[in-house]
Image 1 (cartoon, rainbow, N blue to C red):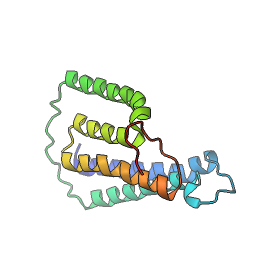
Image 2 (image 1 turned 60 degrees about the vertical axis):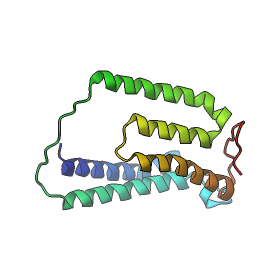
Image 3 (image 1 turned 90 degrees about the vertical axis):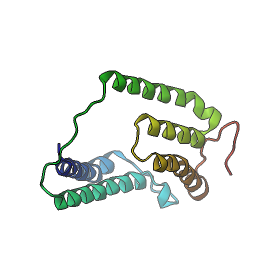
Amino acid sequence: MEDRRIHLQLGISAIILSLLFLVVLIPNWVSSPSNVSKMILSPLMWPNVIAGATGLIGAALLLGALRMPRLATEIPPDTDDPTRAYLRLFVLALILIVTMPLMPRLGLVWTTMGVSALLALLVRTSHPKTAFICAICVPLVLYAFFAHVAGVAIPQGNFVRLP
């Protein structure tokens, strides 16, 4: 498939999914107590933020696809060996299985950093430096937000404790 068609399909799908969540799923199945002291801790806020961001990303994909040329680009055939694909799937399952016993020992933040970096290696990302920077920074920023702003306790490990 050409890039333009892929972006159109992804954009339309993201917008439809966002609307489904905002109009049907979140209002009908996510309940929130009326006495939530901080809006940021409301069970309704984050699903709405994620659904809204999905809709915005879908709209950006749609607009970007409409600006692309209609010319078909040559896409190289998929040369990946099915055996290698199954091996990557097995390694993914192994990473996810090992994650569970590591989490209580290393803590949520450190385990997430390691798993994110391993997944970047596994999928052979074309931007490894960015992936590793994000693997370190995103868990730390999320920890800082939830632990210090929202006041939510994040599981710490046995070896290194974050402030």
